[in-house]
Image (cartoon, rainbow, N blue to C red; front, side, top):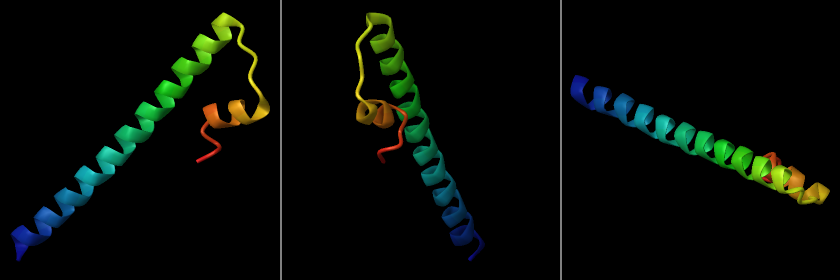
Length: 57
């Protein structure tokens, strides 16, 4: 019973870590895209800015 509980806790921790890693990766990619567009002087609509800030999810 101890091992089953331990496995369940470890599985939840792995899933949480995976989700956090994905969210962090998305945030970094949004920042990279924003910087690249800003450097090139590309105008963005308010909807595009909102999507790049992660507000559309």
